[in-house]
Length: 377
Image 1 (cartoon, rainbow, N blue to C red):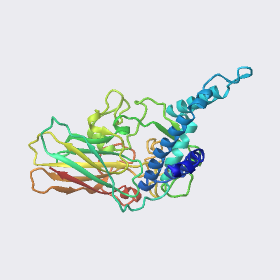
Image 2 (cartoon, rainbow, N blue to C red):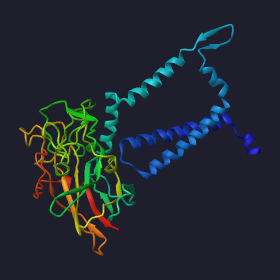
Image 3 (cartoon, helix red, strand yellow):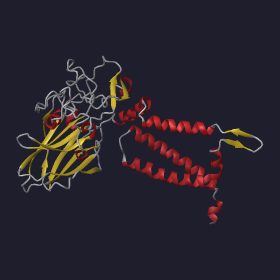
Image 4 (cartoon, helix red, strand yellow):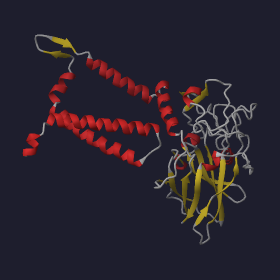
């Protein structure tokens, strides 16, 4: 009690708020410009909660003066003035919220700038592995349970990918997991080159040769789902899926999208995906994984490689084509783990669903994933 009496509470609260704010400011900047770091995120979270507690205490002790700020007129009864700070503060706050929620282009550019900064360096090897767990198990299915264990590679930024099951003869059985942007044809960002004559021959986000903000315009894509065409994203999977647009492209369209039980957000960390198959008489099935990351150009797959191909030279920036991994899974074997192996790539603009085995011209696309294992229970 004696010590509490000696403490100047006003100074204590003010200093605590100031120091906490400085920590929040620094950690916010670090999380904006670099990849996720658990220690920094933990400091940001804990100090943030501490700041909230101190702020609530501060508001409690200063509630009466705060109420005055919300009045239209302030001052004494003899001399009152209109409180213009109130409408200005409310207008500013509401405007920022509405513009951000509706992805106003300049604000969206700031968000994309942060994504670019976090992707400007090859990811460092992780000393401590963290996994995201996703359960897509259909309780009505009574077949074998599968777990897909993916460990990401150093160039796993924000890719599109799909996992599916087919027969050994190549007949499509069912999808296991598809990123929602592809499954719902919901590519919300539109990226256009400011100078159409610029040629990219290295990874745009990681090479350090160009500043993406200087050469691209990042805007919200206002096209309808039927107008957003990304047949080059995962052509092998899309052709297996068999959904076709009116233009003849193999893409999901507005009235023919994938159901939610097979779709989900792009998982940007290592992940464990649980699913279950229908009862099947098949002894063996093929599990395939196709992945593609935009902007990963190289000397061969440069932006001017196929100038007469409107899809490859369009605004999808597919660069190196999708790569495909597969595992032949024996459902009746005592073997429990089946590593996937790289087997080829898709067409550079999605003109067909063929699997191309020649991988000589691939570079960073070969390091999108470290390894994938299928576990059978």
